[in-house]
Amino acid sequence: MARLGTQKKIELGVPGQIMPPAEAAVKFAKRSEDEGFDAVWWPDHLMGWHPDTMWTPDLTPLADLQPNPHVYFDPAVMMGVVGAATERIKVGVCVTDLIRRHPAMAAQTALTLDHVTKGRAIIGLGSGEQLNATPYGMPFDKPVARLDEGIDVMRLLMDADGPVDFEGRFHRLDKAVLGLRPYGESPPEIWTAAHGPRMLRLTGRKADGWLPTKLGPAEYGDALATIRGAADEAGRDADAITPGMLGYVLMGPDAETVQRLTEAPLVRALCVLLPAQVFRDLGVEGPYPDGSGFHDFIPTAIDRAESLRIIDAIPPAVVRHYAFCGTPDEVAEQVEEYVEKGLRHLVMWNITAFGDPSLARWSFGAMSELRKRLAP
Image (cartoon, rainbow, N blue to C red; front, side):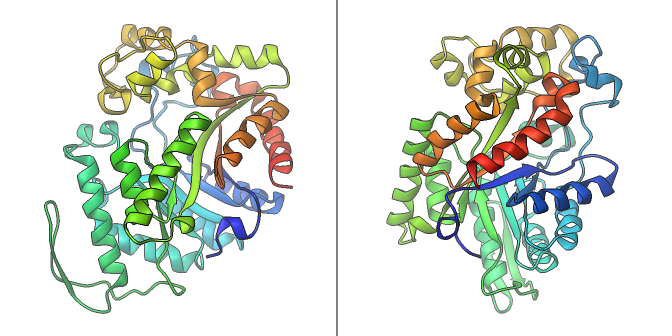
């Protein structure tokens, strides 16, 4: 697979269709391919980020259009369907985990997608979110350690020519084998959603790409330096690791509209997963001052009063930190700051409809214009 730097300054990805009708996902991906986008990505969620008690007509018009906030296709299935129906565009998951998906099964799925897409699949992995684990009876202890070991199991099975053994803390292989070989000369790429120092070092040691959610430009550059330092220490080619990012995009035709979008309840609620330190750095206490929504937030367990409290605890200034906000020109300028810090693949996750569903069609046109400005 060609590295990004050899072709263009930045590659741009878009979110894939996550809910019925399934045929719309293929249609959207084909259009994205025709327009010049480089990848289409799916999240891997059993449960959505918004509590049902937020999904009400007084907080969002979407409640009248969609019965609940937890409607998600399986990303691996959609990657295969779309990959088989397209020719150039990459397909990825941002991200799955090795808690719900056993590493052996994840490796087999990755190799299958590698063949279906003829080498265009990217496997995004993270440590997982509690909301996708504990409500379904799965463990959420030591998530980073599980991921670290799980990647070793995946690599071992994808690279081995015959049966292999493995004795780890969480996994054991006894003459295990995967006979399916990669489509090309190497297995599908594994990218990791890393933020903290431990995950950043793991990325440098074991991943092919980096896919964090949006952080400040200076912080992005510092984190990338940590990844490259860990790669150098492990004897890997640091330049072969693709610096990516998943960034929410909130766009409007003018400043007044953009401000209104940042005030929308569902948009503000998306910031609940940010660590408490981010809120403190912005001069805000935040909804979870002693923790993080990433680990402490189970949407189906949140009552109405708690939903309103969470929204009230997240001001629009936090949205502007967490998302690319502005007109298409302004967003393009914001993205360029990250390109200067080393960003080479941006997944532009359009959340404008969460702020105002009536702007959904306009926002997709704006995304196309944004692509032309960033990657002509």
